[in-house]
Length: 329
View 1 (cartoon, rainbow, N blue to C red):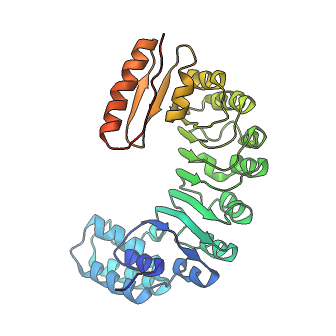
View 2: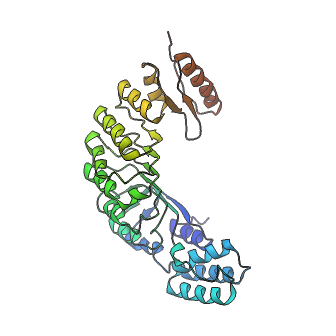
View 3: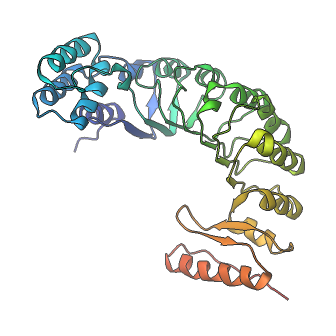
């Protein structure tokens, strides 16, 4: 039995026109960085390009051609340009070389050496990615700095996930000043050891930035009262519309949770929900898992009914959780 390496699977995906990749449990060394350079798997890609160029013209085919040709390199661009001009009707008779990059790239539980990060973030494939996620080693520091400060790489970025790093005030300050703040809609920074001091690095975001941000995830960070007060003020600044806040942090007090739930749609865990039962009336979205949540914003009886309605369904899904009851008096 042949076990395919991540590079083989990546090459196969590119050949088939895939633009979205989730790379799991891989090790990337400087020697592997050729996978993200123009010309990688050029023979297989060129064969695929030839097939697209002689097929019946279509918008989907033209998009795939525009994606593949720049990846192959100058040979691919020249070949595609010539054949489109001779055979394809308008508006598909010209190459849009700017389409030659991935739309989604996520590194999950990967070990990536610093030199490999440098080559990867210089790749034409990565420039303009819309969704970029990292749960990998060695991203904090120089690679993160390069990524956040590069306007070419982040020009189309709408969703950014960075997790399992250690993010400092300087990292958050750099994020606030990043060109990505113009376009980003979803920002997920869970489990990065972000405390109240580090969080305030986001002050560096100019008032005109992050206006498109609608979802923020800071779960698993040691954020306390000062961080909560900062978030509420920062979230209101210049009309920012952060609708959904994921804030599953053990360090939050009941008073802090109440403040957050008054200002955001708060997504919380089982443990945080239990803590909320010690408070007064709340407005909370309780998230059992990634798929199932319930709006809870009424009196204690309604909260309890909604909770148990959802909890019964959650139990039926076989998730095996236990709960000792809210204990309403």
